[in-house]
Image (tube, rainbow, N blue to C red; front, side, top):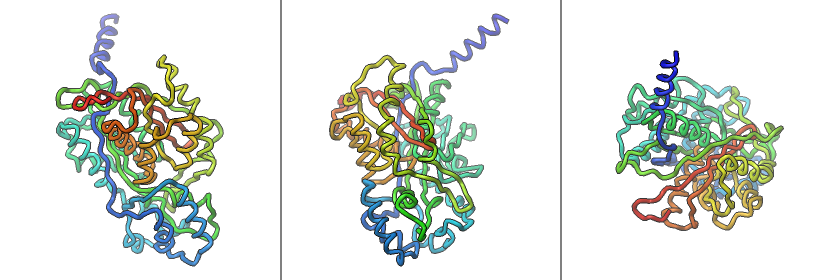
Length: 394
């Protein structure tokens, strides 16, 4: 029995990676249909055929103005909405038609960019994690995506559904575990989000709070390749994934939640969220860094934060007393692309990488990724920027 136990121990040790998981490549993609946020209220009330609700339109304009968004992208078009008038009414049983619009091609576009940057063939991908709030069927987006990318039939697939804003962070957390516990694993994370699953027109009972979900979200896809023990010189690690943590703020599930109903995906997004983030972000970060034995000043870190809205970022700035431009990557993504739910944090990671290459943000080695999800849940990942072999700037 002793020898067998020893043998199992050796097998487990040999199957694990030597080093920590790292980000090896990043890719992003958006649909071609783009609407500026200034024009969106007119667009929204026109395509939903509710221009007679003038008072509500004024309320919606105020909502759109304070989001921090400059433009947004949509997979759905006016022609598609005209073909599905049931999408405009919250009481219509439209879920089946909405879920048919899965857009694995959008996820494939982001993933193909990541694979090209990675420099190895797609058949070297061993694990696939797909996160989305826009699907709820099996086989799902992961199945079609694997086929579109030409992944090998033995690739291990995992689907994550309805993780809200934190879907990208949750998928990366899982990818870290897979990479570190499976020697040689290369994990492709793909997050794809389509607002068509939750899009609806306004009605007379709506108010500022109930219209938040219609004024805030955008479509996009992000992809990341994660692995450990990089194969040099082909693979060039970008960020080391040092540790992960998750915290739930008690008695806050009413502030942010999602559910699948006959009329699509719906839920609650409270105007109290920015304040709640500000009150809790400091302790969540202290809890994330404490086990590492690292004493940090918040302004010594680089930041990859899901930008739920301008208000969320402003409250984080105030709570942590961050220097100007510390959240530059998050604010840029919010302005250029909007809130793409779980995919957004991958866009922020990519933007942070670009800023560090330009040395525009005074980047330091240690950083943190933060995402927010239903619950109210805070996902945290401690990161370390790895040296840029070509420019040597970080």
